Amino acid sequence: MDEQTLHKLMIDLGALKKGHYLRTSGRHSDTYVQPAKLFQSASMAESVAAPLAKHFEGMGAQLVLGAALGGVLAGYEVSRALNLPYIFSERKDGAMTLRRGFTISPGSKVLLIEDEVQTGTSVREMTEIVRALGGEVVGIGCIVDKSGGKLRFEAPFKALLSIPVTHYSSQDCPLCKEGIEMEPSP
Image 1 (cartoon, helix red, strand yellow):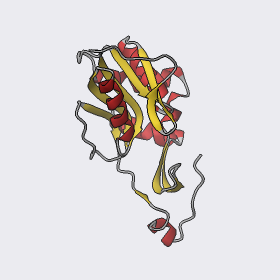
Image 2 (tube, helix red, strand yellow; image 1 turned 180 degrees about the vertical axis):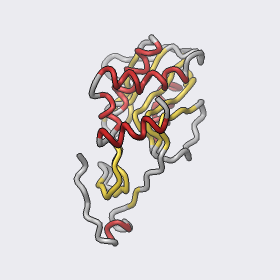
Image 3 (cartoon, helix red, strand yellow; image 1 turned 135 degrees about the vertical axis):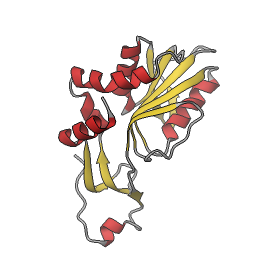
């Protein structure tokens, strides 16, 4: 699936909208992005994840690590396409961690998968988990890069769709100052 096709699909599904939205962080945004809608059917999930998986073929990954909550489905589908074991990290007391008996063996080559990235915080936290357990991050992939291509990581990075998403503090939001009504996040 190419970038233009994915962009149109997300708009058609209501997974990508322009407007004035409140993010879970409390910040305001001009764009609503919800890649989870791409995983509503198995065939759609496969058509989205397969091209991302293909990009990482031959990189020597032995394990796929996703991030809960959003990256769980994307990571699983990429691992399925690559026929690799899959685990996910999740937050506990604000820190990204492995739970549920998941572990990474020393020397493991790990592919990190997220649904969307904006600042790269979760990816950096997952990278630290991999390093702390003696593994190596060989690649990083996501469905949507909301930084518009500005992020840089230590391992090769691939996003299926790259769009700039602007966000503001509630005090500095130009959308509020213009009187644009806040839309509820679907």
